[in-house]
Amino acid sequence: MTKRKIVLAFSGGLDTSYALVAFREAGWEVVTANIDTGGLHSGEGEAVKARAEELGAVEHHIVDARAELYDRVITYAIKANYLRNGAYPSCVGAERLIQAEKVVEVALQVGADAVAHGSTGAGADHVRYDAVIRALAPQLEIVTPIRDERLTREGETEFLRSRGYGVSEKVKLYSINEGLIGTSIGGEETYGSWEYLPESAWTYTKPIDEAPDKGVELHLTFEKGEVVSAVTADGEPLPSENNYDILSALNVLGGEHGVGRGIHMGSTMVGNLARVGFEAPGMLILIAAHRELEKLVLSNRQQATKATLGNTYGDLLHEAVYFDPIMDDFRAFLDSSQTRVTGTVRVRLHKGNIVLLGSKSPYSLLDAATRSGVVYGHGSSLWTGEQARAYAHMYSVPGAIQRAAANPAE
Image 1 (cartoon, rainbow, N blue to C red):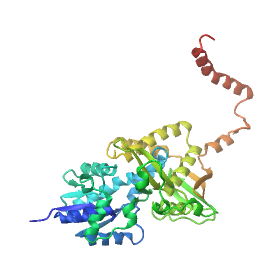
Image 2 (cartoon, helix red, strand yellow):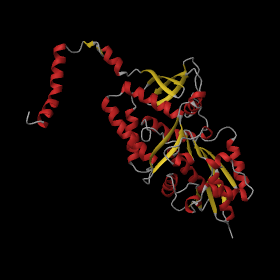
Image 3 (cartoon, one colour):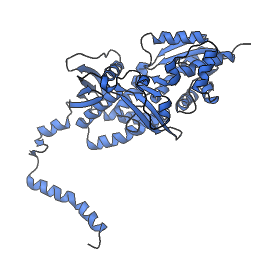
Image 4 (cartoon, rainbow, N blue to C red):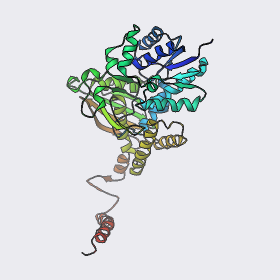
C-alpha cells in the first residue's frame, strides 16, 4: 500500500520537530519545506535540513522567499507606516502569507495529499496558514497535530527525548520566530502582563547599558516611499544588492545599538488578549524615517487619510485577510500616495533611541513655503497683518457660535 505524502512547514523548532516524528510514526511519507523569510543565518539552512533528515524526512526543500516577502509585504508595511496598536511591526504574522503560499507550491510540486504546520490553536498563525491553503489548494488536507491534540511544549519535549532526539533548552523555554520583519519571542513571562523577558530570551539586540556609548548617524534615502540606500555619516554604505539587504543590515546595526526591543500586548484575531516580545530594529528605523519624510512632502489631509487607511490595511494583513479585493485597493492607494515621497532622512541610533535629525526632499513643502516668502514665526510676504487679523477673526466665529449655543442663558 502506497504511503500518503504530507508536506510539513518545517523550521527545526520544537513543534515542527515533534510533528515530523509523529507523522512518520503514523505512517506518513513526510516531505519538509523550510521557507526562508529572513530567519536563516549562515549555515542554519543546512542545520535545518540535517535536523529534518535526522527526524526522518524523505525529502527536504529550502525556498528563499526573502525578495518576494520584501516586495509584496514589507514595502507596503513601510509605505503604510504600519505598527500594530501603534507599537508592533507584525514581526511574524505578515510573513505567514508568503510562507504558506510556498508550502502549497511545494505540496503541488511533489504531489502531496496533505500539508501540515506546527501552529497551536491558541494564537493566530494557524488561521493564517489555513486561510492561504484553503484559498490556493482546497483539495489538500490540512493536518495540525499541535492544534488538534492540544499538546504542551513539555509534552513535546518528552516525546522527542524519549525517542533519543535532543531538544535545545532555549527552544524548550521560549517560542522564537525570526524573519526579515523581526523576531517574536514568547514564553512564561509573556503569558501575563507584569513580567519582562529575561536577558537570555532576547536573540540579537543588546541591552541599553551594553550598547556603544557613541551612537551612529545614518542617511536613509527613499524613492517613491521605498528605501534605496543607507549610508553612515562617515560615508560607509550599507549593503543594498538585494531589495531586502538594507533592512537586514539595519536589523544588525540597530540591534548593536540597543534599538528595536519591545513587548506588544493587544487583541488577537479571535478576540483574546495576548502579549509577545519582539525585536525589530530595521522596521522601526525605516518606518520612523519614512514617516518623517512624509511630514515634509505630504499635505495634512494626505497624512491623516493615509494614517487611517494604512492602519486598516496593516490590520487586515495581520489578520489574514489576504485575498479580499480591498487589499488591492489599499495597495493602489498607498502606491499613489508615495509619488513625492522621495528624499533623504538623517537618523541617529544611540542606546535604544531612534533620533530623527533632519530630512530633505526636492518636493519639500517647507522649502516651497520659504521660496514663497513664508517663514514660520517670522512672517510672510503673501499676506498683510490686516489680512492675518481678518483670518483669525473669521476662524474664531464657529467656536463663538458653538459656545453661545451651549450656554443660552448667558
